[in-house]
Image (cartoon, rainbow, N blue to C red; front, top):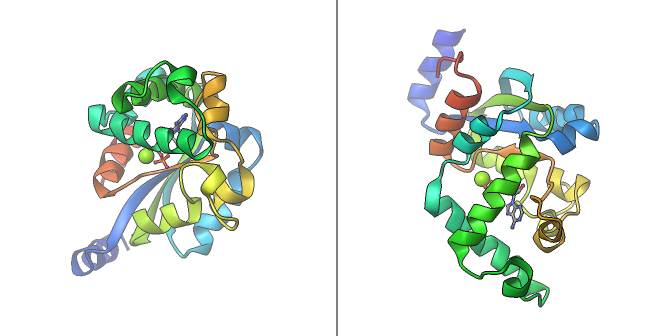
Amino acid sequence: MAEKRKAAAQEAPSIERTLVIVKPDGVERHLVGEVIRRMENTGLKIEAMKMVTASRELMDRHYAGGLEWCKGVGEKTKKNYAQYGLDIVKELGTDDDTKIGKMVKEWLIDYISAGPSVAMILSGNHAVDNVRRVCGPTLPLVAPPGSIRGDFALDSADYANRDKRAVKNIVHASGNLEEAKAEIALWFPEFRQ
Ligand code: ADP
Ligand code: MG
């Protein structure tokens, strides 16, 4: 079976693996089953799954994208504030993308290491993008109904940041193939990719 899948992956480069995590807010709200159901509905296959409370160290390595990642998160945050006419300098003390991203990273580490998460490896055709499609965009406020974030969350960056915390959006999904490989190795070191 494993050999067969390996051969299929070699034939079709679109066969990928990705990491999905039901974050602590999703576990607390009893949404683990809902997330699994929606993932399985796509036709993707669950290859591994476990419940873990992530250490701060694990999360630091997970969001190891460095300055580039921080900059991207900072940009998204700025857009969210501008959309609602909020003064980001007044709220966060800076409008520097990287500085904002670094702040968010600390809050994210607090958020995900706060309680148990359920991590799973999914595989199949364009697994990375298909999983992102089912999850919806990062900010629940703009995630359409029908997506996990759109159906089960309503948090926003400005609202969360007032309490110096990360946006609660139920799930994590690898952003691209490179992230997926690194995240699977981090969360499932025992899994042979
Ligand atoms: P995604 O999870 O969709 O890949 P990112 O990698 O950009 O999104 O961000 C990681 C996580 O950080 C998000 O899922 C969300 O929980 C949190 N987050 C993103 N932007 C902000 C923000 N501006 N303020 C607080 N938390 C944020
Ligand atoms: Mg991401």
